[in-house]
Image 1 (tube, helix red, strand yellow):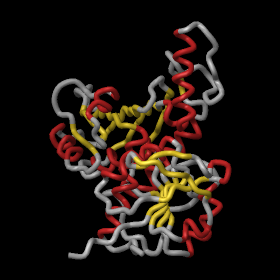
Image 2 (spheres, helix red, strand yellow):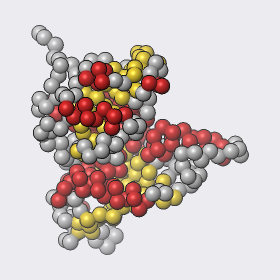
Image 3 (cartoon, helix red, strand yellow):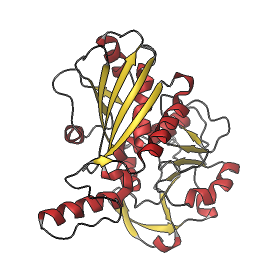
Image 4 (cartoon, one colour):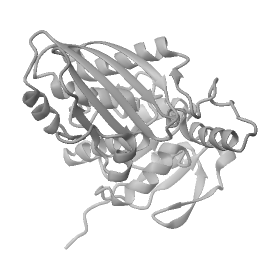
Length: 327
């Protein structure tokens, strides 16, 4: 019996936080892929890293390297995607931007708005907060029209691997009564929390992301972003004001039926630690006890895992529909 064809894939900037997570997850994702090619800027070419417990060299990204694959996952925030985007848009390679820097490319959330591509060759994932909120607010849109007030608690991972490393260094510095680096974050993050420095701009950008994914079904929404001293755990408190307050059961059923979400219907609301220990790709969501008619949702997710899961699910759906030609 002939073996099913395998996707040829490239991981661009594979040593970023998202690149590391993609290298960890891809071998067990269920996608039939050949061994990927790892690509990066010239100065990082020749770096030795690993994929599926085997050593692998990072190569220099080039037109030829990208043109030879079916799917290219862009895992960093450098200008690399912008450099090659014009070529990619004219070819057959599907480019998936995990970091969300793909300009005006379509924002796609698996199971929410992953309709046929209609020739689009570059797709973007929303930011992890945008992805989480698009799933949650998309789940409850059929329950009733609501206005949403959202508080997002951003972990250090929102500043990529450099943010995680700086929080680690800050924590050690404080415990050892030594210097506290502040090169990534403008303020001390360890043992502290504060509104994101660009809260107003970032909040509007987050609202725009959710609107781009949900379209007219997106609720009126306001968002506040807070930096917290967590490494990977993303948390959101979603306050929903419905014109007619729905039954809690209806909200829970809508959340439980949504791919990428796991309802925690009993016991205490989940914490980022419990989500990490569960090793689940799904975001955990609880409906908090009623306080005067407002529906309150508590949501936790792993920052990089959320993005990587979405990217792989989007590609899997497109492959199943025959929209990704396998060379």
